Length: 228
Ligand code: CTP
Ligand code: CA
Image (cartoon, rainbow, N blue to C red; front, side):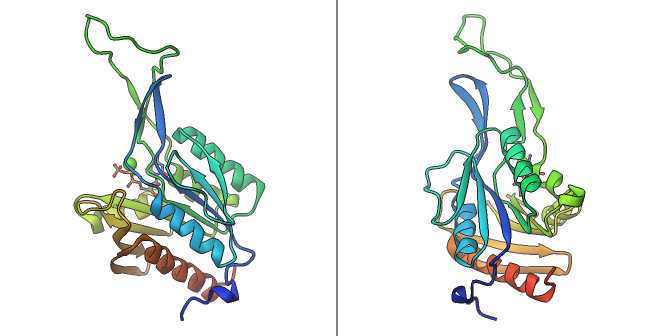
């Protein structure tokens, strides 16, 4: 079935999307971050809102405007992103969670309260600790678990094996896998495979907007088949 935006097929559905990188402070002027333009997550937010969904975008620092009709919550660190997502789940029954953010896997344990100065003794040692996995937490959130939880997997090798491992390890429903060995970051195009528990489907390299439309189509079909 073709998507019919005029029919607003996602009216009444609440969606939370994470997008962009996270930024983990080292000191007041420095930090660790990930490469992510946020374009794919923002495109998904825009398309779902156009289809009638009530969309909240929990966004790390990016150079993009919030799409029309989308509520944006700006965050920096992974811990803040997780808290914002959990607050949304506590406040409303969420139908769909889409975790497209490039969350920093580690943060600095010993964040300095003042600017670290260069010193003759050499470079400072950073002690890293692992950040919480937001996608896994949302997937395992029991009574408040969204009906459909979608993650992303950016891989430079073994896309299928890694994506399927993430699907089962994190407990989400779908994984959008993308091969980042090609030109993806900051680009307007992307080539992805959708992994579900009922098999996978590859989409040829296309604009991030068209990928968002494809994903939206699958979401609409999912709720049509099972109007929970
Ligand atoms: N993710 C998340 N919170 C994290 C790390 C990842 O929510 N702390 C989400 C991402 O938004 C994405 C999915 O998990 O939807 C997969 O992210 P990815 O970085 O590919 O997976 P990791 O489990 O972090 O594994 P690795 O980086 O080692 O490949
Ligand atoms: Ca990671």
